Structures are given as C-alpha cells and as structure tokens.
View 1 (cartoon, rainbow, N blue to C red):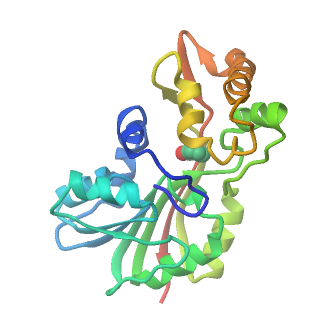
View 2 (spheres, helix red, strand yellow; view 1 turned 135 degrees about the vertical axis):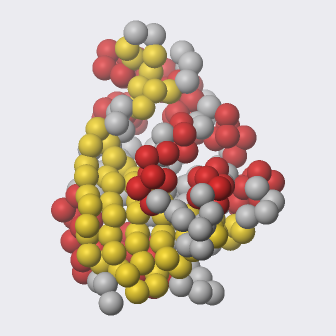
Length: 249
Ligand code: BEZ
C-alpha cells in the first residue's frame, strides 16, 4: 500500500491498528472476481493480506509494493506467494496479467500518469484494472485541521472521478464502472486520530519541530473532535474513488 509519497512504514503498527485498510476491501475482491487460472497483480500490496485473499480464490497473484518493510512482512505472512519490490509509477512485469488490482494505494503515487502507463503496459489485451483509493475531498476535515495548525498542504493524490477517468481514457482504457463516495472509517480506540496521524501523517507533520509535535498533534485532534469523534469513536472522513477499466486493444 505504500508508494512514492509514502513514509518509511511501520509494518507492525499497520498490521495491528490499521487492519481496516484490507478488512474494508472485501467488496473490492468481489468486484475483481478472481477465478482459477487468472493472473493478477496486486499493486500496493502492503503486508499481503489481499494478495492472499485473491490467491485463495484460485488466481495466481503477484504482490508489488515500494516499501521494503511491507514486502518483507508480506513474505513472512505468505511465504508461498510472490512479492516484488517496485515503484507503482515505474514497473514492468515479466509477463502481462489478466488484471491489475489496487486497494488504498494509488493516492500515494503522485506520478499518476506514469502509474497508469505502467498498469496499462502490464495488462493483456482486454485485461481489467480494478482499483479503489482516495478521491477528491478525501480526509478534507483532517487536512483542514492540519493546515490550520501547521500550514501543511495535502501531499497525496486525490483526483475527481472525471479527472481520473480522463487520465485512463487518454491511456487506452475503457472505464466501465466508476464511483466516488464517502466512506467514514472507524479508527481504533480513544487515541484513534493520534494513531492515524502517527501512521500516515509523516509527510503532513514533517515540518513540525519534534519538540512541539505532541502539542501540535493535540491541537489538531482538538479541532477534529467536534466533527470526527462520535459516540466515543473516531472516524476518518474517507472519500473513495472506485474504478473498473478495461485495456482497449
Ligand atoms: C486513505 O486510505 O484514503 C488514506 C490513507 C492514508 C493517508 C491518506 C489517505
């Protein structure tokens, strides 16, 4: 799940408190509908759990991630699966695949057009690209609170549906399904928002003096409490872009 804009990942923290990243994605596996004999690239595979689910349905899967920590953990989790360390915006496969699948990864890839080109080149004719990632307005409340306290701007790629469909069409894809929807996502525990900022906010908070970081994070969390803390639970204001596109001949 980590690519260009990604920090050095803590694969252990990701495996523990952030299991929702793959647990929320079962609908995506149904959308991919992997079957026996199908070849699939899991782009931004993180610690490999969705690669494993895809393999469980009979497909031959390769997981790809740019984070050495994630790939190392994926290999420990699933020693029988194939994982490769590569950049989503600049990779090649030895053989083209029937489908490229990607969950919660492509918002880290700032060179979006390069990624789409690599994905297109990795697919067989009529192969499918099935992806979900952060869309326009994703985490807008979190970004606004961080901006108010630190001046930091959004470091991620959160395109609109129109923008991403246009990019795909310009690269010989036919977009057959696309949706853009809010999916508020529960964070674990009373420190859920602090933990989220700790796990994912490295880029956002990199300019904050380590001596004041805890106080700054405290003020960000205070700003978010009225809107994102409900009935004793934290929610991240996720907005997803979900796409199915076919490689045109
Ligand atoms: C997301 O899944 O939408 C996301 C995760 C971490 C940082 C930014 C966005």
